[in-house]
Picture 1 (cartoon, one colour):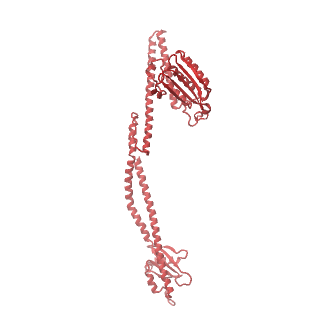
Picture 2 (spheres, rainbow, N blue to C red; picture 1 turned 45 degrees about the vertical axis):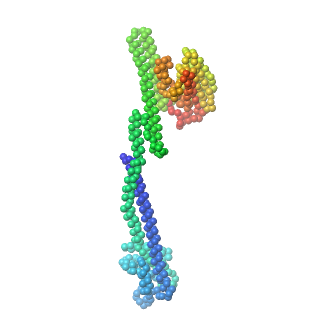
Picture 3 (cartoon, one colour; picture 1 turned 90 degrees about the horizontal axis):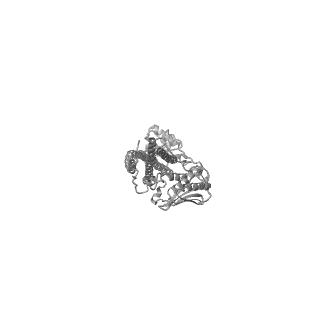
Amino acid sequence: MSSIRSRVTAAYALTLFGTMLAFAVALWAARRASMLRDLQARVSTYADIGHLVLTQAGTQNTPVVVDTAGSQRDPELQPLLRVRLDAIPGYLVVADSQRPLYTSLAARRLPPEDSAVLLRAVMRLSEERLVATVQLSTDKLLMVARLEHGEAGPVRRVVAASAVESADFIGSEQFGVFVLIAPLVVLLSVVMAYVITGRALQPVDEIISEVSAISDGRSLHQRLPQSEGDDELARLSVTLNAMIARLEQSFSGLRRFTADASHELKTPLTVLRADIERAMSAGPRSTEGLVALEEALQETARMADLVESLLTLARADEGRFDLHREPVALGPLVRDVAETTQILGEATGLRVGVTALDEASVMGDALRLRQLFLNLVTNAVKYTGKGGTVDLALTRRADTAEFSVSDTGVGIAGADLPYVFDRFWRADRARSRASDRGGVGLGLSISQWIAHAHGGSITVSSRLGRGSTFTVALPLMHTAASSPIASGGPGAEPKI
């Protein structure tokens, strides 16, 4: 397969050769037309001179034609006029209305067949056709006529002619020069084009080498060198660097996700195995066996929740999870979530309040919205100490409904806020896993997906030791119904 360098060079060579050929043809045609105009002007001058010689003889009362009365010879011009006309170069013919009266020396030297052809062409000239060409056996002649009318004398036409070979010679000479010079010019241009194209494509070769070194998946931290300027190669480097950065982020997230998922599954499986072995070694209906089976059941349930969450996110990533959209009134949904929050917080004495409850309806999946709200309140209850407060609020804005959950819990450090929605992320992994707050770190990721799937957003504000506030903004039903997201048309959220 040919390279871009060779294809560009070949295209340049063909274009140059075609341009030179077209220029040579145009130049040849222009030069030949100019030579033919000059030749016609020169022949016209010869005809005018011959006509002037005969006109002057007539005005001086000098006989123009020899009197041939009673002679068997054809009439002819006076010898003195013949001598004068012989001085005119080229071909010259003087004729009356029926026959030639004079032919120049060049015309008399023609072969009989060419002479006959020339004389017939001379006699065919008329007032409507004063310029014509005649093809002889050895040459082509350009003829120009001067005609006389009335009773001025026996002379009716003076015709001068000259060979066209001079104009043709100019074209042949030019063509020969083109044949000699064109290959040298094309060859030199091809070499220069090949060198220039190679230098122009050298950055592309460097980019290919760099990308080949990076594409193994272990060197995604490297970046392509970016040249100064705003040309195409500079923009290509910027685009490729942005793509490599996204790939690095995706690969890092995939490796982290795999490691975290493996670790989260390893712990309950180890506990489950130990509990089952303990239950098998204990006696029938023993207390120790029942405790082991209960722990195994808890770990099995925890692992099932983890697998279910992973399956939900996997389907969301692949766009294979449909939302069952219908009008959903958020007020009753928030009241139901508040009651559940009070039940969850009874064990630790949490105070649960609803600070605002505006009526608002959205177009969405009621079960998924309830899951979103429960994830947020469960997270708030989990990280709020005894005697703390969890406040829920539903407020209506211009075109959105905002549901917020505020707590007085441990809070989140500012450096950790950008990562709270990452999968398997927890601010204190060791303490969370060892305490009763243990979770798998997927609840907020699922909450973010549900919010985005409904055309909304979720944000968090927090200070360490001062509590956190999670806010979900969802488009109101009249806005959602007219938006592409709600209608499922182009630009809708992924089918998850």
